[in-house]
Every structure is written in C-alpha cells, then in structure tokens.
Amino acid sequence: MRTRTQPNIIMTGTPGVGKTTHCETLAQNTGLKHLSINDVVKERGCHDGFDEEFKSWIVDEDKLLDSIEDEVKQGGYIIDWHACDLFPKSWIDLVVVLRVDSTLLYDRLKARDYPEAKLQENLDSEIMEVLLQEARDSYDEEIIVELTSNTSDDMESNIERIETWIGHWKTNNAE
Ligand code: DAT
Image 1 (cartoon, rainbow, N blue to C red):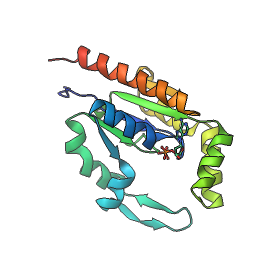
Image 2: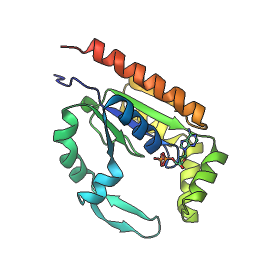
Image 3: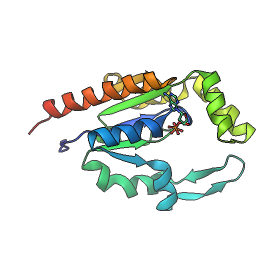
Image 4: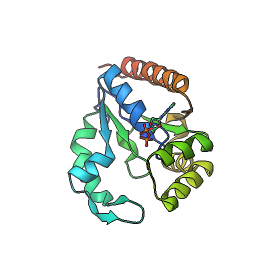
C-alpha cells in the first residue's frame, strides 16, 4: 500500500541534458527534495571505486538502494540520475525523461571537459534514446513523460508542467 503524501519523481536523461538544473528549480518552487544520486554515491560511499578512463564512480546499486530506501519511501523526492531501471516501481510516481538535440549536448559536454570516449558514449546514448527505452522497460507507460530540454523556454514550460502534475497528484492522493 502506498503511504506517501508527496510524490516521488525520477528526473532522468543523458548527462548534460539538464537534470540538475530542472531539479534545483523544482525543489525551490515545490519544496520537494532534490536527491542527487551522484552526491549520495560519493558521500555515502555507495561505489566500488572510480573509473579513471570514464571519470565516474562504479556504483554499488544494492548499497545505494539500501542507503536511500528509508528516505525515499517517505515521499517528496526528485531523484536525479542518468539511470532509472534500478529504483523499485513501488517507489516511483512519475518518470521524467529529458531529451536534448545532439549538437547542443555536444557543446554542453565539451564545456565539461569530458574525456573523448565518455563524450562519444553519451552522445550515442542520447541519439539511440537509451534512457527513454530504459524508462519504458522499467515503468508503466502512463507514468513516463518525455520532455525537451534544448532552451531555457523549454525548461520553463517543463517546470510548469511538472508543478501542475504535482498539484494534481496531491489532490488525487489527499488523505
Ligand atoms: P545534467 O544534470 O543532466 O547533467 P545540467 O543540469 O548540469 O545537466 O545541465 C548541463 C548544462 O546545460 C548546464 O550548463 C545548464 C545547461 N542546460 C541544461 N538544460 C538547459 C536548457 N533547457 N536550456 C539551456 N541550457 C540548459
């Protein structure tokens, strides 16, 4: 049985698509908490070391899920991560998959000084719609929304749309 009085949202998409920017604004506007999985992995040591080639942590998913379970089950979290298939369906009310034009993504990742192999892998991932497919394989179609994140106007309308959704969720799930 679901006992949350606030929804849990996954904000996913290829690195550079705009997850953090969206989550920070949403957290500010709605009071939901921004849960950066990257920070959790680093700060709570939910990893098996650092991959030097890809400049990223090798995530220990079991440890990560154990570490966030008690918090997330209370509701009211926006989970910010470039994967979504690890979170149990029962925790999640909405999955937002952000999408970006690949030339814009190239510029954003170049600005981050990503190693060439990592940059290329992420561009391929965006072009092949890897995260959208992962969301579709892991959650019911009706809780997945695909939103464009090319411009600040896009971001503004995405935020508005998600805020409206949160309002409806709260009305429909009021005790
Ligand atoms: P992510 O958390 O998905 O890696 P981010 O929020 O850190 O992405 O954004 C990466 C960069 O792109 C950052 O400089 C902000 C910019 N950006 C993100 N979404 C944008 C949008 N919709 N319009 C313009 N710039 C955007």
